Amino acid sequence: MAITTTWVFVEEVAAAPASIGLELLTKARGWEGQVAVFYLGAGSDEAFSVLGAHGATTVYHLDPGDNLGTAQATAALADLVGQHRPDLVLFGLTYTDRDVAGRLSARLGRPVLSNAVDVRVDGEAVLVVNEIFGGTQLVETAFRAEPPHLVIVRPKSFPAEPGATVTPEVVPVALPDAGHAGQAVVAERQVEEKVGPQLEDAAVIISGGRGLGAAENYALVEDLASRLGAATGATRAIVDAGWVPYAKQVGQTGKTVKPDVYIACGISGAMQHLVGMKDSKLIIAINKDEEAPIFGVADLGVVGDVHQVIPRLLEALDGR
Amino acid sequence: MHVVVCVKQIPDPASPYKLEPDTHFLVRPAEQVLDDTDRYGVEMGLQIADQTEGTVTLVSMGPAGTMQGIRQALAMGAGKAVIVEDADLRGADALTTARVLSAAIGREGFDVVIAGTESTDGYSGTVPQQLAELLGVPALTYAKHVEIGDGTVTIHRQTGGGYDVVTAPTPVVVSVTAGVVEPRYPTFKGIMDAKKKPVESTSLADLGVESVAPGQEIVSVSPAPERSAGEKVVDEGEAHLRIIAALEQAKVI
Image (tube, rainbow over all chains, first blue to last red; front, top):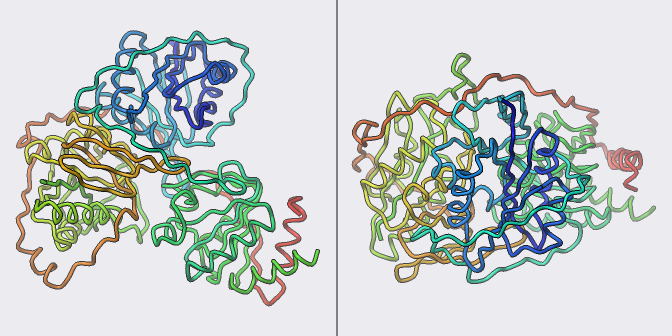
């Protein structure tokens, strides 16, 4: 028996389906069988047609209103999964997806495999591929429990491509009573103003690390980024130190990026960082320490002081 | 409030990690350290206990070993620790971990359970949510700010584009991001006191948790295709020109 049904959990972000959801749909429609979406958000005809264009034939729609909604989504999803018995339920490695995947795993008593970079369907076997030790080793894991198999996939593991011409059937799902677990309420939503290119979709990214020496030197990264029309990123070390907000973090516990050009400034190249950027097309690294692991993945490694190299680079760019 | 903080002892991240060749389990030396991300949870727990005249209990699962990591957390100020250690738990997955922790936490009782968002050695990142579901409570996740009200907890929950202010009544599970608070360094007195604090070691049988066969199996571990290092140049005042040449070639400028 092969895979007959794959479900994809899709969260609504800024009135549209989250991009990771579309990546997962694109992957799922390449397999045999039906693809359905469990959609958490206000919903709209436009959002549903985007889901259809990416391969969803059915959309189960739950509007959480002002509830955090993760417990309700879990209860509703567990109920629907019990009725329709999908083989696989895919989630993205994002905040809400992880919440629902974790809760659902506990509710159904099924394992959830996290941090997947690939999912392979081979007959009835479902294999999940993970990178460990900073992406130096690949681990392949097979499910041994009964379906549904729950998988959380890292963003950018698959491209998102429309191509299906499906108008999905939209099935509204009533908000279930999740009891005490469902009592988390969103009182306010703060959206930080996005200035300039964003990490997720920038062609060029300039990132900074501890080697910058002090928070105010992050300005070097920002100046270079603004000169090149690039987004700015950071290592976990300087995010934890409070130099820059978490939204800029690239790495295992931050964002995964695959730009055309990644310039690492004063970054030693800890595993936790490398895993988030090593698939960039061109990597340029500037670091004082000749032995820094970042040079192991850099196409061009400059052994030098960022405080000297970047100002000279800016000057040369201005002179062009 | 009675606060339970989930903590994990992990192999020192500064030394390279290895897998056991036959089982593919992570090699865990007797001397493990407190996961750095747990220091934020412990600090948050201590602050809540201070504000509410409450208590902080640590709950951990895994080989106790020298207990260096647990003592680190006790030295920060936690009152006691419960550690679940059992041969059947070697290589336990996230769901098993959550089942074990929820049994230990349920026995202790709690108003607030605090955990990091993910461990540094396994980083599945689902245990806090699985715990919340098993305990039947809300999960206030990815907190970058936490406020305690009268029988409620309010957090700033990290989102892709900013944060949401989310409130839930206790009992509740809260997962905290690094940076939620500034963890204190243990004082000399704290380190001395930690040696005398109660640490209860318990097993699956004590908790009444049955060991279950894992629902997944690692079928292969192989080296990833390596990205080879390119050219390395030592800056002698001209290296920026090489960067410009590379950017030109990539058609960025």
